[in-house]
Length: 171
Image (cartoon, rainbow, N blue to C red; front, side, top):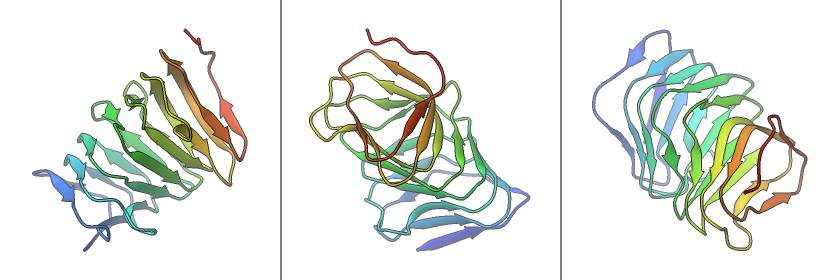
């Protein structure tokens, strides 16, 4: 269940639902995806989103599962609405940048987890007190969060370095 997109044009239309553990959207040339993306099945390793070139995502991302976003040394510009991680794990792999400026990834449940490995993510917001082993996990490669806001008790597991670029308040 793979869709390979090669740029430079735009994919538009209805909601694209990734409802199989092997669902994969792979981008091999810069393009725009105007569709909403709905993740309803956990992504297997090597599945989910695999972006090997710059991508603009202008649709909304929703998730009721654990998706994997894997992107090389490129930029994903996300223009959709804020993303509620809910009781799920959102994994970012690769050395690229996920630019979601102004549209937070919300850790809005005690069981929300953002798993980072080598990636830069623009905005993360901690809305709820998190359980043990939840919150933000930086695994094998240093990662960056440009803007972090916290309105609750936060947990950051540092198996590798994390840089939070902008000043932030705990309160």
